[in-house]
Length: 311
Ligand SMILES: Cc1cc2nc3c(=O)[nH]c(=O)nc-3n(C[C@H](O)[C@H](O)[C@H](O)COP(=O)(O)O)c2cc1C
Image 1 (cartoon, rainbow, N blue to C red):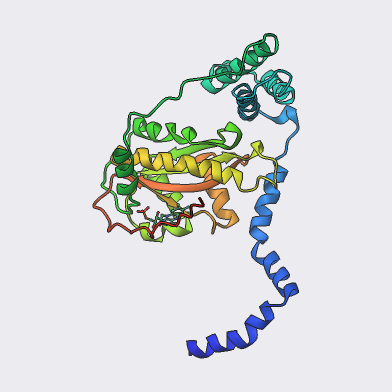
Image 2 (cartoon, rainbow, N blue to C red):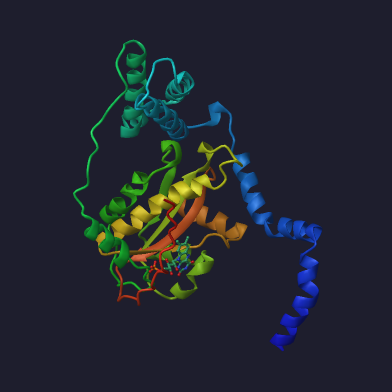
């Protein structure tokens, strides 16, 4: 039976799909959800008065980073980077709360603005700083990377807040485009809410009826990106941070399993936002369920290296 269906598909469907107009209509239909999500992003564009400190902090980091790169240039010369400097000052002027001003990334940004002014007013050469080497050796890092596993059965043991904080702490230590640091982590270590969050993820089929003590939702501040040219950037930025989190969780004896969010329906998104108080400005990148592993899994081997070096 399947053989006939396949044969029929080959004779009728494939030639039909080769028609570019048909493919165009099909593409529109298949991408309708992605298009609607991108439209949501554009709809997030707000007037400056509606934007809060966390938005301006992201913008300030972005422009201070550009200023900093300019100051570190090997061929540094005065008079460049005035636009980024102006934008950084403008973002700084919008920040209101003392907590925001006390944030280390904001203090760094303010220092960059001052440094820029100092360098414009003097004949100093470009900035130089010492390269700091890690004390973690290659074997140790490789061991953490390769022994980390996605485990889907957990011990009935709660995960304390202190450990959740340790995991979330490293999300911003990954590289981010223009140093925006867009990540925000919404977490719960209440098994009842964990279960509800897990059930909203289509890929969590194998977790049904299994106790899980931790759920994290990794989000990106979507307001920091100019859509649609940077459509994938929020996910790239946050995904790099997620790898930090899963590795740190592993060093703490915990396993985190990301759960795909691509197959969600609108009602799942509404429900998840309600459960963890996630504002619409923050794009949900992926959820992750976790806990202390109850046993391991067979290691899924990695394919042979695909590396092409041109000499
Ligand atoms: C973006 C993303 C989505 C994933 N979604 C699911 C999922 O929905 N359900 C699941 O059980 N595992 C999910 N995983 C985990 C992968 O199945 C797992 O990483 C892969 O099988 C390799 O296993 P390992 O992480 O133990 O090496 C996901 C991983 C990523 C990075």
